[in-house]
Length: 499
Image (cartoon, rainbow, N blue to C red):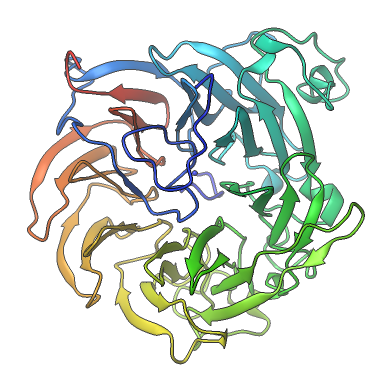
């Protein structure tokens, strides 16, 4: 079984807030990361067998762990090369597909060879796990090799733009010769190699949904344990970095030394929110600490700043903090970690934390944190803590008064935002690795058991439909009146008939 986290227009809209009945250019709401959409008129049910409410569907690879994003008339989704679309690329690769929003046909694909080191650096057949982020006809992505990439949304159709022009070499594993670049290949504008530049030890898979804020990109590094799970290789490497989006130049990095407190890997992606009229970047560390960082100034070329935390909140203060690696595979006690993204709503941060799914204890919680403090706010900022069933890798969907979250204990939870108490729970057929999506008054979620559920987003539980699909690791996305659901092997575009 794969061990990596599985859990992101020809004129592109630059969304300053949540996507409301429009594009969805990033995993979750723009910056806040809330898994809530303003889309309306979505169908309550669909059926791939009869074609009911299926606008189109296309095959993907054989393992899809990324989530679709929609911008500029394009649908972007990461997968593997289990079903090659280009006969020049045989064998295991990371793939990013750029499909047409209207009918799903291929515009171009990014093809990335696997890392040549230990298989635990780039787990076999995992593909590209990271969801893309799109702004102003630029696609920002962390590929399976731990490279931050800036791509042209239009691909090679408007020429091979620079400064990077060696796509033929990049898409080919050595020692094979470079391939000719075709119209269906990606156009790479720049690359920043996290592993090479910062000494990060990537473990299992690279996973990050890049956060865009003005001229800056915030990127988590996937720094993790050694290949044998018995040591921390890159103890001083950063877990969160900041790049200049125009050039890919390193602007800032954290210096919080999260690695020694990380029992497996860094999986979470950053979020942004305004607290007390000040923008802050929020990050869930592999050490189970939620950090709030100040926005760094952009220094002249050659200077790199250290990110300064405004506050830190330990989601499991009673857990071991020293020599955490000795708790590998201890299912009773041990450190916690953070896999899902922090969600920032109304001066509060909602975040899940608990034992690592593969090597840790099953206990986990959804936490509500008052984000207005400074320093170490662990003792006084928690507003409530809700115990989940068993392990959690999901990001919550936070509405005005309800929160929806799924866990690996096969339970979907509906929780009150004010009290932290459950209104209802619902058992699914399989573990929930993906996040919920709330859109059009409905909760959408898929499980690894292959059931895809649509429920009313209300205090009273009401199941509207259940569809039997292949296993689902991907979070559904809604954009321009269409619901996108990716299984491990297929992408469905779903809308009301004749819409």
